[in-house]
Every structure is written in structure tokens, then in C-alpha cells.
Length: 254
Image (tube, rainbow, N blue to C red):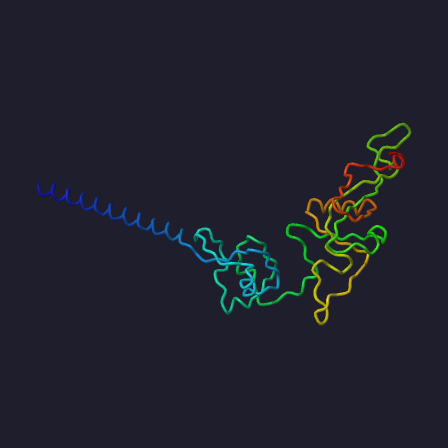
């Protein structure tokens, strides 16, 4: 009888301990879940933060703002506060709008003045054009241009008396339309101020720099390497004839 009572008490004790352990585990899991959901302060770029901008200036100008995000959604190393120390640090690279502002993007060493501003997500490509091919001195940073390519096509298959792969005259067609010019010579859309705050004198050099999406930039580079390029200034509402191909035999046809 006594043994049965002891066994029952032991089983009851084990059961109670199990219940307590489950309660402790559940409580810990709840605490961890709550901690993951607790909001943390983090900075997010509202507008482009140019390299060289101090953290304090970026906050003062509203380029980046502090917001609260669930702890589990905050990336490791995100900037959580801007104080007297961090406010003096400068952005080492441009910070794109919508990005979490990482503390590693700021440092104590300021960068030099950027010579050119490339639009976000695009690539700057420079091409050397003669005076006529860049509309004399009338092309300026901010112009929209059409780029034509004159090249020698390759015969795809042998014709009667022709050698496969041989050139067959030259053709001209539009390579790219509505291309943004961001620099002409050393003059860009965002030139660095000259002495005493004066803007530098416009440079009308033959080197024209344009901004293009990466895939389109590859087409321009191929055209530079294989053909002769010619640019035209685009007027208001002008549309290039993208499908038109002009050859020696069609030059004088309507």
C-alpha cells in the first residue's frame, strides 16, 4: 500500500515538473517572439544622400529619416541614431532612396568632389565625336540626342560570285534615341564650383558623355567599336525612325 502511494506521489511530482517546464518554455518562446517584434529605431534614405554629405546634414535636410521597424526586420549594422559623434561622419558613397542606412556607409575621411553625377541605375559612357557629329557647339549637358550608326554589314550567306562574310557597302540607321547627355568635355550637369564660387567655363570638347541603362550601354559600346557614330539634337516631340535603314541603293528613294 505504502509503495503504491509513493509511486503515485512520484508520478504526480513528475507530471507537475513537466507542466512547469512546458510553461517556462512557452513563456520563453513568447518573450522571444515579442522581442523580435519590438520596434527599433533605424534610418532610411528618403532621397539620394550624395557622397560627402555629413549624417547630421542628411537628417537636417530630410534626406534620411528615422523610423521604427520590427527588430527582426532590421539588417545587421543599420544606423540607429545620429548624435554629436556620428553626425560629423560623411557618406562614403551615394545612398539610394529607400535603402536602410548602414553605419558602414559613413566614415571620417571625406571624399573628393565628384566630377560627374550618374543617374541612379544607369551607366556613363563617353564617345568621341567630331564637331559636325555633335551639332557643333550646341550640344550641352542635359541635351537629348539621337545617335546614328553607319557601319558595313556582313553578308550572311554567299551570293553568286560573292564571298560569305564580305562587306556589302555601308548602311546607316538609328542606334539609340532620346539619350541624355550628362557631360560635354569636362562640363557636366552638376559641375563643381570654381574659384570664389563661380561656375567653370563651358568646355566644348569633342568628348560627349551620356547616361544609359546597362543593357543599352552595351549597344553603344559595340557601335563605338564597329561603326561611325553621328549625333543629332532631338527637338520637342521628335521621334526617331528606329526601323529605317538607309543604304547606298536607297539613299535617293522616297
